[in-house]
Image (cartoon, rainbow over all chains, first blue to last red; front, side):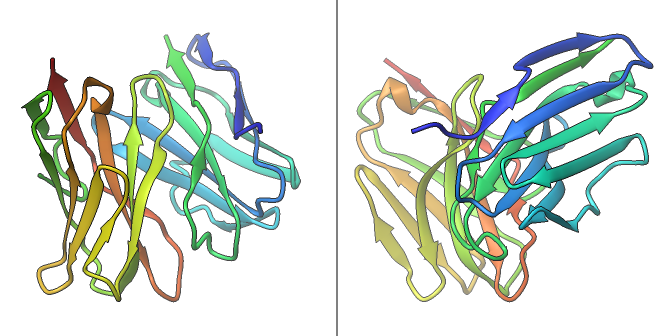
Length: 115
Length: 112
């Protein structure tokens, strides 16, 4: 039974480059979340989709960040241009239900290093 | 213990001891709480949940206690094992709307 699948697991890039992180939620889940985790800030919610529609993107840091969910089985988080302060682990999580009243199922994360 | 949004505390225990991890939540309207465990290099995983109409819930070796009066949540782990070493997060869910809020986490280190 596949869980939430994220790719790439690790990405090292140079400042100014475009970064695209990918997520495949658990089949049947209709809520998807992107989180960023750093030692300084902990787990920060970036954006929340319900039924492929962005519901809350107030956590997206700035215009350099964008997220899409073209269908129920795929989402992307894009950073363009990337900066060293974007270095973090980015998690995707999915759940079932309006407003995700149940538990979140997290992927293994994508560790991003921007040099 | 830990408070939502503050520094990451560390709890060190000996194998076999009981562990208590604390969480002070912020929203009095929160009606559902979840504890997650995050092992190194992995995403957080669900451990146990509790609704606000309860003050205690038990799982296998874990117990969650909820004190709504002082907005405090605790996770008790019985007979702690080295495999319990991880960062533990509490999540609160306010009723009526959904913005998941995680605490910074508590690092549990179990010494064999």
